[in-house]
Amino acid sequence: MENLDNQNVEQPTAPEFQSRIDMTELSESLAKVKSEIAKVIVGQESMIEHLLVALLSNGHVIIEGVPGVAKTITAKLLARTISVGFSRIQFTPDLMPSDILGTSIFNVKNIEFEFKKGPIFSNFILIDEINRSPAKTQSALFEVMEERQITMDGTLYKMEEPFLVVATQNPIEHEGTYRLPEAQLDRFLFKINVDYPNLSQEMEIVKNHHENRFDDKITQVQSVISGHQLKNYQNLVKEIIVEPHLLEYIAKITVNTRENQFLYLGASPRASLALLTASKAFAAIRGRDFVTPEDIKEAAVSVLRHRVMVSPEREMEGLTADEIIKQILESIEIPR
Image (cartoon, rainbow, N blue to C red; front, top):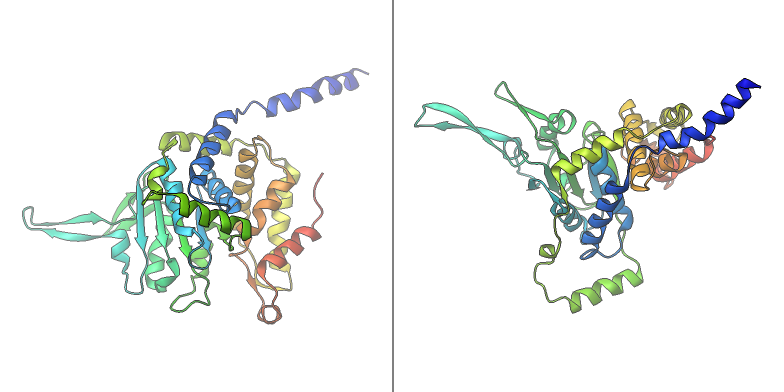
């Protein structure tokens, strides 16, 4: 009887222990960020939410969509809501790695070489049209995206925290684009696909533009989070509770991509870690301090779509990576 009594006493205390992580300030700050972005952007709630999750996860994002669907401006607005350094790099076919990382210049006064830092030395990096540059230039980002450091002329330069890369690209079918190497795609936490707005959103965009007398819309957006606050929120997200059976659920999803007959290339262990981090951040923006299977399912498609390759036969049949990932999620039993 004593054991049963003890169990009855212990069970109610578990939720209290789990709710010790205070998410109030985080939720309020994210709501402010959303309202600031909404001053300019109509709709695109999914893209904005995924960008906020990436911020909390300290992960990089690639946004894909046709020209004119507010990819670049959304990233610029998000950067404006956080008071950290911002840098924009426009990728072109003739861009060189030194144009991104920096270069050593000979100083005549000191009679020695000095390293002049490139635009990558900032906190929030917007890379516009990343697939306009060949692999040589894209490979310059490998070290800085994964290890958040740069090695130039034998000297190591550490990046300032927070460090986040948001890249935009047009679909690969468009003229003059290069396919990103798999090794680089794997370094992005999310790939966000942006669609056209629906009729009501399109009407609101036109109406807002007609009524708005401001030339520069971006100036309407104010900074609401400091770099220090963001770092605290990122540390808070790491504390979010994940049950062991959910860790197994994440591993099963990733392993299934490697065994799936429709996929030519499965997801790497980095995908499992990204899925874990992203699901914690999704729980945080929902105001919870514990992860549910729904958080994992919500993160899965954006985390995995750029890390897997559909087999050529299935691709010819018109099957997409998103559809296969959704099939995988349906086939794996949700832990209770």
